[in-house]
Length: 109
Image (cartoon, one colour):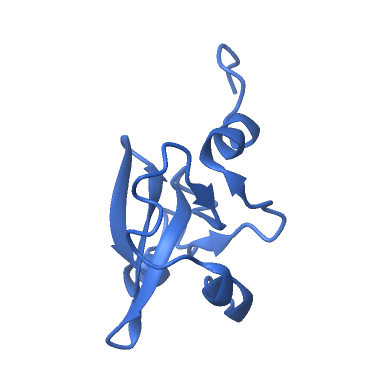
């Protein structure tokens, strides 16, 4: 699966362009189907035949950070499944995206 489609590449703001925004827009969602990690991509720039991306990562912790597209493409979960792009993800402001994407608190699986 192509994680960063041409359409996303064209719409993705350059690195640091949303840094002063308290509620940046999210343009893509990547996830591990077998490990519970999620990357919400807010910015990115092509650098040396790779893409340096910035966004909010939910994994062992929840934090903002930088990640290379090539690194994400190389990740495999415990069942050997690669990272996927959520094809039904709707871009929007971060607060709205997190409200939609997080499971309701207090519910157990």
